Length: 461
Image 1: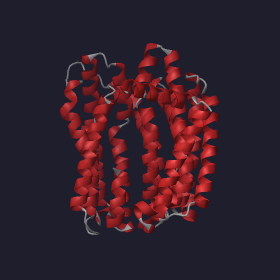
Image 2: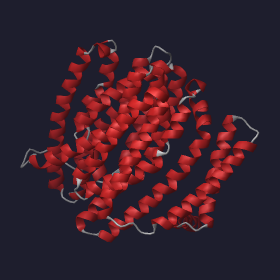
Image 3: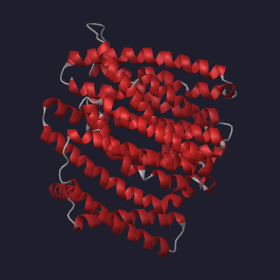
């Protein structure tokens, strides 16, 4: 959705207008994070623990829903006071009221219930439907440079629709009850996680906030579009981490250490398998991608994208082996140390580099702070797991990536075609070269997937 809408909006709205909406969304996101109090992360883990207990699920659901409702009401009130009192926000009050609906709709945010129950098919179908509806609305109502408020409103639709459907369908898994509710036991881990989530989000939020302070609205837009593509790729990589959290929580709770380690090891290989070629490929095609998708008006976004894409390798590894491991093992307090240090590093880096390199400086600060967090995360998490056969497969993946890089260099120099065809050919050929090389060196995961595909074809023949 952000990928497709970004292409359309870049051609309809000016960089200055896109920057205004991106900055307003950035401010609102701070309040959204505070409103949900770390419940999406905590709730996922706790639901996974009681997934076979109907009463336990209903009790947990009711407790967390009430806590979230109180928190959302409080922070929505603070937000409204802020935008009516501060002159900077008053000048664009309709915009800030519209994007502020994201805070209000957080009252209905119970996605953690479905994730904890591993209802990923339902989540995917629901997401696709509302993203499609949002895009249709975008085509109908955002037709010119004066439709900024329509654009802001439509960005809320996808989130709001998902939350409403969640509430309408939650009865399959849990019912609201006031019987025997206990709130005190949730307070400590929730407040640890809200601190962790706030510090984590500082990486993505403080960049835009500080660019908005030190630079122009168009610089916010350049950073927003560069980071938009990178975030799509990061979501692809991180989806493999997200879906295993309920399962590793279950393994750890049952004391099945071998299965716990095996699943972590397999996921690390998958992350490297995807992230390394993505990162290298973007270094070659970023300019073509930005120019073709968003027009030459956003060419400054290409360097932002090249820099940020190194996080594709760094962040998922730290997220899996540090954040998720500490979460499922009940050591949330250790997560806070890592992200707090990373947040401080990011703010210091931004304050120095943005004034020198503008949006590129913010991207460099993000990469460095993510590396610091990953390093501390892995140091903390390694006591709880043991990876198996990862180094051997990682070397094969890096080797295949080098072969792919050599192919990209040659294509970049020799292909006598325009940007669009060069982009298509380089992406297509690189994928073939990369996975063919992995097959030649007999990388375990790729060979296993290939053999499964061949077996299915033979059965269906």
